Image (cartoon, rainbow, N blue to C red; front, side, top):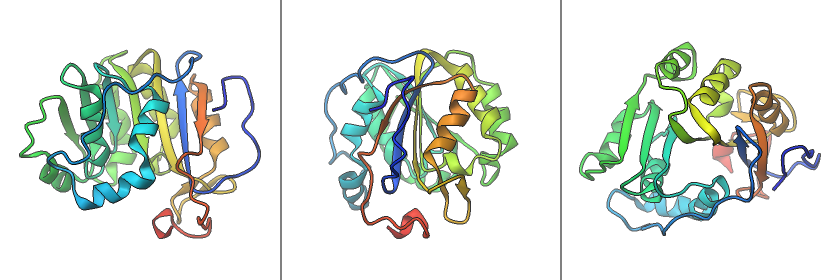
Length: 232
C-alpha cells in the first residue's frame, strides 16, 4: 500500500491496479465483516472461476468494505461484484448498482434472490459513460455513500473530471472511491481499454481525493499491454 503523500513506484506491474482514494487521509484498511458464501444462490460456475483472480475477500478488505455500509457499485455489469457486496454489507447495509448497462444479465442473476439490500439503477450503453452519467449522479443526495467502487470501467469515462467531482460530492467525509482498471505504460489506450496508474491518480487528486492505497493483488504476470485485458 502507498500512503497519501508518498509517490508510487515507477516500476509497472502487470494488468490490474486496485486503488483506494479517500476524502480524508485513511488509516489501515478495515477488515471485512463476516465471510462470503461463494456457493450462494445466483452465483455461477463462471463467478467461481473469476473468484480465483478477482480475490473478492482480499479486495474488499483493502477497500475497507464493512457491514452496514452504503456502497455504490458503479457500472456493475452482470452483477458479479454486486452480489458479493450485498453479502459484505449485510441486511443493514445497501448496495446501489448504478449505471447498470447490462440490465438483462443483471436481472437474470437477481430476479429470484429477493436481495432487499440491492438496488439497480439501469442506464443505456454507451450513454452510461458520458453526460447522462454525470446528470444522473447530480440527482443523488450529497454525502449519501460510504464507498463507491468500480471495476475496469474508469477508462471508459468520457468526462472523468465531472464524474469524479460528483462522486466526491455523494461520498461521506472519509468515504472511499475504489478503482480497479487494466494498466498500460502511459496515458489512455482506448482500443485496448487500458489506462496508466498515474492518470487515474492525477485525475482523482485533482477532484479533491487523497490517495490512501495502491495494491497489485490482481496483477497478472502474463499480461500483454498490446492486447485488451480480456485476452490475458
